[in-house]
Image 1 (tube, rainbow, N blue to C red):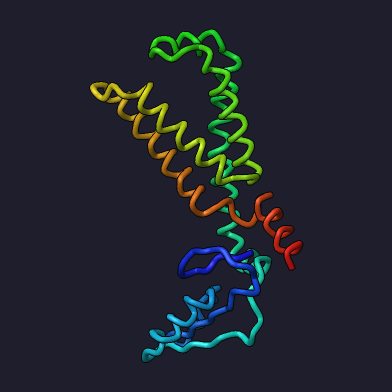
Image 2: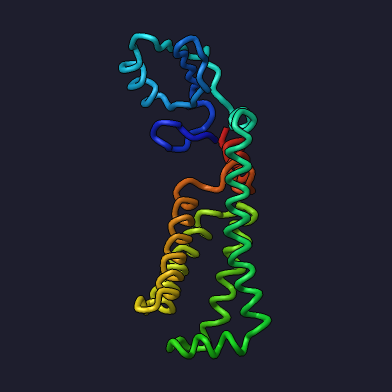
Length: 202
């Protein structure tokens, strides 16, 4: 499974083609393109100073893409870890100071019965993102969780501190939505699952 560098859609490796450009005597990093984007690119890429070549019928594999851009995969893994640790730490803080967490929730009119649900969401989705297993689902749930938390607990914008917490929650939700849109990356259990699905379908 690979991603078209133009439209961003996912395709099997047989549907992707390596595209290599040359500009000013310098070979640029190759890009994987689906057939539709490749045809459109070929129509507009003929310009002075830019060369174009297509690999001979051999598609780029996901493994080759990961080997070519290891820094991007490492960054995706590091980003997932940072996001996951935040929610796992918050869940642990609630568990170890359960009475204080209940009192804080009640101060904002939130029933104490919802606290176990909040902890379960933070632990379950945090582990999901950390391992890269059903990452999009975990990221989407946590994004909704962050927006809800911002509105319920940090809606008093007359306080600069509360406004800062509100903005931070929205920023975290934004990062989670990017993770939902782009996926966990190659160094994740989702990538292994997709690889097995493609192998079984062939």
